[in-house]
Length: 197
Image 1 (cartoon, rainbow, N blue to C red):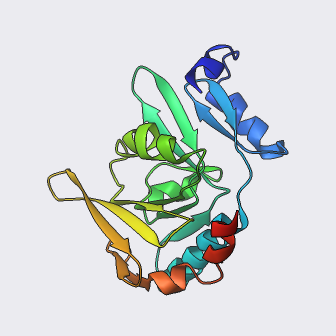
Image 2 (cartoon, rainbow, N blue to C red):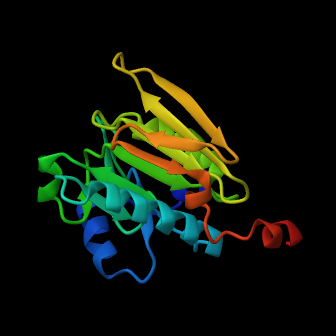
């Protein structure tokens, strides 16, 4: 991906944000270059919707905003530029984020549903960038080919640690006070069909 980005012309963050308002496909923005987003599988969409439903229900009446894959997160990198990503789900409870209609800068929770073609980037460079967000408390990776949720949580000293949930466990998103079962999260996902592919 890095080599492909090097051959693109530089685009300002302002031009990128304006272009995304009318773009037929979404793009992420990495230091002046854009990367087209790929389509999602049925399993990916089912998992993301199941979690978004649980999160939205939990936060109803609270001063938090819940967004699915259409809202960008801005990661400012001092002396380098900006990055804009589209996480599968984000929660922001910071009043300052309400002033930005097309992106958020202070999410409390970010979730990515893993895909074979994005998993290494989500775990690597993207997570490294997300860790720069000072209000981020949890970063969650969800497998779509098996029941597995990995929760990276920031402690009071700013260190990140991993909590891993598999099979019929219940996982906890402490940043928003949500407890959810893997059965609920994966409702509607046909793992037998995935195995046949």
